[in-house]
Amino acid sequence: MQLWSKVLLVSVALAVACIPKKTATPAGEAQEPLPAEAQEPPPADLPPAPPTNGANPFQGAKLFVDPNSQAAFQSRQAKGEAAKLVKLIADQPQADWLGEWTPLVGQEASKRIKAAEAAGALRVMVAYNVPNRDCGNYSKGGVKGSAAYKKWIHQLAAGIGEGRAVIILEPDALGLLKDCLTPADQQERLDMIRWAVRRLRQNPGTAVYIDAGNANWLPVPEIAQRLTGAGVEEAHGFSLNVSNFVATDKTVAYGKEVVAALGMKVGFVVDTSRNGQGEAPEKAWCNPPGRGLGQAPTTNTGDPLVHAFLWIKRPGESDGTCNGGPGAGQWFMDYALELARNARL
Image (cartoon, rainbow, N blue to C red):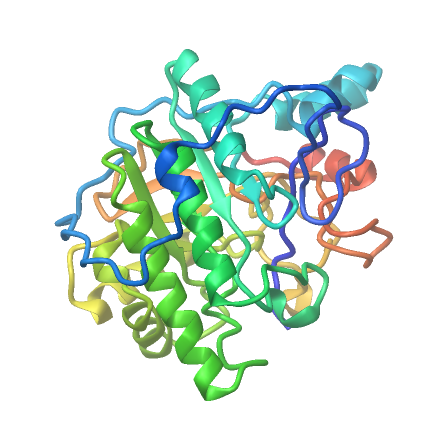
């Protein structure tokens, strides 16, 4: 299994995150009402989104650094060398993960976009809620069925509204497409992802990248076929190496092969959060020892096909109950310190 256990947001109390990274609303805190459009049922069908023609939504953007991340909280609680090491993580822009632990996803998205706008920054968020997510493994979950998924995406899109955002769409969903789904369910998943791309791209400032696994997972023709089935021609491109450890040069080479196989003008983003020391022996993926932080997030990659190097997986948050780690998304201090000590930013 090559899952890259996902991460999840810190609770407002900033104690321990739940599976996958959860953000709770404090008792008594008022939620902004959803936009009127989100209170209506999502449309059954949507027109195709216009092609992006290779446009890079990261160009000239400043990436948002979350002052309320688990790493930021832990860096303030730690002492001495540990505080300095965790601060290396906390000071970098990282993605937010949204799933069934964010049922008020429209309000949550709206708050996050407003915080990023106030900082003059672009926020990257991960939509991680597809039914039968992760085939029942460490990051199992997701909503129940296509109708619930469309409603959730509809509310996410409405919460973002006119703001600027980048959505990484459903890590592992294409990589695991044939691992635990019937042929009919496989087609339903592809249709859901295509619908999500179209709904999110109805927002003028929302960019979408469909997750495509990593360079060690699927052959280029296979992932290209799955991306096509999921509607990548209507997205800005695809994401690679989410929560994995494959070296950046190998990942970029693979990504360019995928672009060539697709035969269309799209780009891709690379998760460099934990690939500073490359892959673990035998391509271990679950809290493997000896890994390090990778290249710091940047929108200046020097390659027009590589739209950004991002920290999509939040370093320091566990992959699952393996190699001494807590549950997926929970803070794993020993691992965070090891990643920071072995950093190649």
